[in-house]
Image 1 (cartoon, helix red, strand yellow):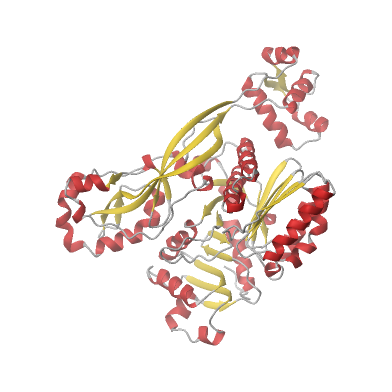
Image 2: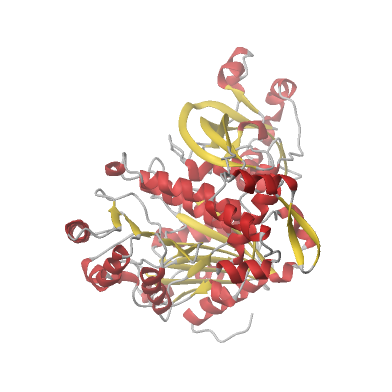
Amino acid sequence: MILFVPVTRFRVTYSLAQGLPYSPLDRLLLEAIGTGLKTLDKLIDCFQLHPRLLVQSLVTLAQTGWIALGNSPEEQFVLTHSGDQALTKNDLPPFREITSRNAYILMDCVTGTVVLENQVQYIRKWDLKKENLWDRSICLETKVYRNTLDASDVYHLLPRQQGQRLHFVGPIELVSKSSEFLVTDVDPDQGTILNLPPPLKIKLKHDLIAKAKGLKNYQKQYEDITRFIKRKDGYIDDNLNQRDCIVEWSQESLLTTAEQHNELLSKVFEQADSVIYIASSAMDVQTLEKQKEGILDALKRGVEINILCGYLSTPESLDWIKKVEYDANRLNLPGKLNFNKELAKSNVRMMLWNEGGIFNGVIGSHDWLSSSTQEGEPLGIKISQPRMFEALARCASSLWRTSKSEYLSNVPDCWDNIATNVVQQAPNISTNDEEKIDLTEMTKMRIILNYEVPALLKEWGREPPQVHLFLVSERLDKEDIDYYLSLVESGNQNRDNRYLTLYGQSDLSEQEISALPSDASTKLGIRKGNSYITGNVVLRDTSACISSLSFLPPPPGEELISQVAIVIEGSKPANQIAEYILRLANIKTNI
């Protein structure tokens, strides 16, 4: 049965960079190798830099053809003839090629998922009318009303060849809305869907099959459409998995208390090299005042501090930052304090900074500059893997642009450049290399945005978990309970599955929640946390998603407040997050 999914079409202009500009470090390394420092250990001892920076520069020199690998432990690197000539000329010319490209992106209007135009089969409404098929066409209902995309939505989809990296993304222009439709071939009896790539097939599966089951008696009406549409399946595209990053997990990757977050914030103000970005959905003067000394110390060292004030920030907090900015300028402090003068429609809670030449980030449920999360047990994930940091830097740039007052700010360009440069450090590991890696020691991560967050909960909730599904919610109101219950009831449960819904606050009293129908209390396992809950987490077997905003989709026609969530797949982080959730629930049971 042929069904149609409405899509919005965008045109993206972007540029790719190939090659690297030669830096002073490259020249110094070349001279050091020429004078006899031919092992990595000797170079580290000489330069006193992080090994990753030196390796990156060595790779640049090797790709240029100026150094080669030696044949003994005492001579790991040697100068080539070209390298010797480069030293003799006393000049390292820039080597970077920039090319411009265009790509077309489709966003489905049911879940908000974006895909490349060439990953799907779609048809124009005008063509259906031309064939007299439009009146018999059945479309899914539009649920996502969005007319704009930004770089963080599309950067992972933009085609590039090996050795190329994104240099700049934009502008992104709306081409058409509800004029094109994805073509799907659905068999409700077999539960099969053709003509969609995996990301869309997973997210649209239940909507398509439910729609098809209601139309089984009218299948004959679609014979002409079936002949008009070509059927196909089996999409293969490397870009589909570019968001997944393979990282090594450690116990220190997880922050589970407000104290840990606050200690890290103080450390960042003390030790950041040159730049700090803090996104806080709420801010208040009381918390800002506690961080004043750290902010001024960082500005004295020449650090640039970017503070994104979210939609819950108080007007007094903006006035406080404005006064500190004025004082810093009056004192001629070398650093710079940037903030958005108009609140951004953002609920994102993250911090990015560089230290020791390495960029790091934390994303989770802790509001760094608000007293609302200074108690309790927020959850945060530390990130240093370059490709994951690139995703956060792209988000940081895009979020800054959501504030109308920052239209001419250079902060987004700064973080776009950081994202472009930091990805050069990324190791050449992809999801296709998993068979070469000890997966018991590795974890998959990816960043998801906006509408993808409630879509993920819908995907996980509708498929019964093999072991357990835990849901932690900052708030659990009546509409949340009804929505979560509808997801769970759509899956086939069995007694071995364990559901736990943990909440911090609710518009219902504990007595009202305990008096809910047995279906809700039994299927969802609702209980109040024994600590102040400040974030939203879903844990399904060995996969987890951490967000700062509710997993509930926005009401029809209403745009979602910007949010960024992190998805983590792996037994080690899942077990650690499960221990955190059970501690909040005061449950002393091993999973």
